[in-house]
Image (tube, rainbow, N blue to C red):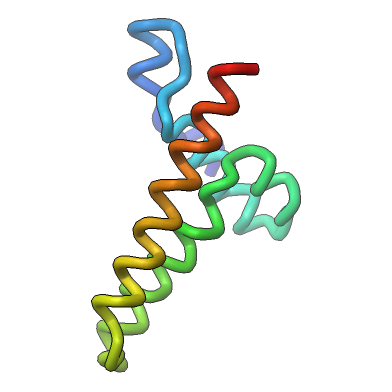
Length: 91
């Protein structure tokens, strides 16, 4: 699975990470069961996984408060991505 990962175009062209760098590797680590390593690779993996599960569950079992759950998990995901990216760029 690792040999089919897409390279980061931003990193190749400009030489620095994008906010999504590490997401694919974190997903692979998560699927392998390496949960701590997945978090340290890309901290937004868990909020994004919850967001994806919410979308998937709603397809089969419509949720009463779907839009509220979607807004909250989306905001947490975006905030986690931006905060972790800022920390990565500063240090």
